[in-house]
Length: 90
Image 1 (tube, rainbow, N blue to C red):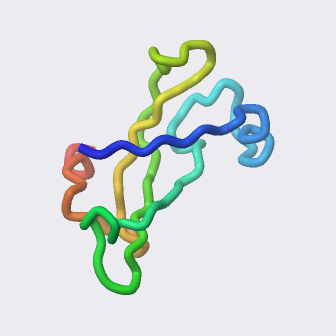
Image 2: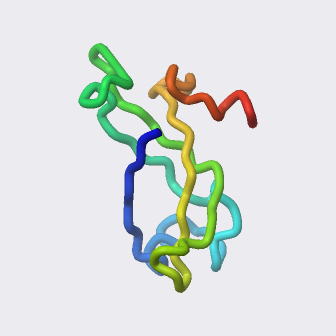
């Protein structure tokens, strides 16, 4: 299991993405990416890994209106990366 963190200012995210307040569905959140070659999750010229938000939860660590987002990892062409085992469960 890997983790990656990202912090958004909720007000600007809501304004930029035209999403509801509070965020109701993971699909309202933007996709994001990282270079998978550095951790052996992607190889070759196109080593980007795209994170698709799948579920949101209240953040028990930061409290308030903060959320945790569970993401699935995909190749730039939209295929699940080999270590993405959750996509079949969906």
